[in-house]
Amino acid sequence: MPSPNIWQWPDLYEVENNAQDVDGQIWRVLAERCDWTGLDVLDLGCGDGFHLPRFAGAARGVVGVEPHQPLVARARQRVADLTSVDVMAGAAQRLPLPDASVDLVHARTAYFFGPGCEPGLAEVDRVLRPGGVLVIVDLDGRSTPYGDWLRADLPQYDPGKIERFFTDAGFDSVDVRTTWRFQDRQSLEAVLRIEFSAAVARRAIAGVSGLSFPVGYRVRTRRKPTGLVVHDR
Image 1: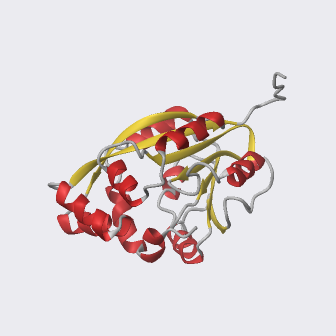
Image 2: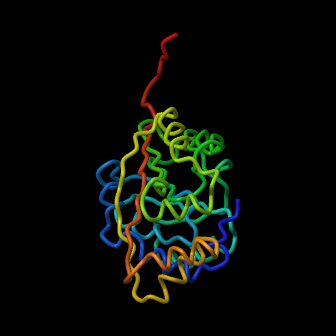
């Protein structure tokens, strides 16, 4: 599935990335739940590589996988001076990596949106080493105001169904409340216009005063078993 925001407006999406989670709450939770120090990391759906340098600061090795070739080129340019980072073209359901080759798979608002992502979950299990972790950083469709805007554009979106899917799939999910803060009003409004339909963007812009607003996330983690798992019959 295309990602029209970053595919069509990568420079503006860079502004959005810089505005997201200005207090580092997601990074705090990631470090607590799946510390990547000295490990091999896969950033799945890495876009133009915005998060790759952050992982590279502590990881042994980092691979970014991205399906959109223009973003692959931008990501490679971003990490050209980082010898521990590689960027590959590929899809979540067909990862260009060997079995049991990474310790942490990070997917932030990419591919893993609930029912239908089972092929990607299976691929992640294939490339994770025993004891490795898949962490999914997902927008919280129940949160205000961002979740309200999201549901207005996607009336079929059912946050309860998505929560049940990930719970049944063995994930532990936690709420993370963040702040998006922009340098100027023009940037804030431009980002809202690439994230939402025209009508919902107008509503969002009218509802936000100043340069910031809260955005809720769900951070989901699942650890691959280290040994044989025997299910009760």
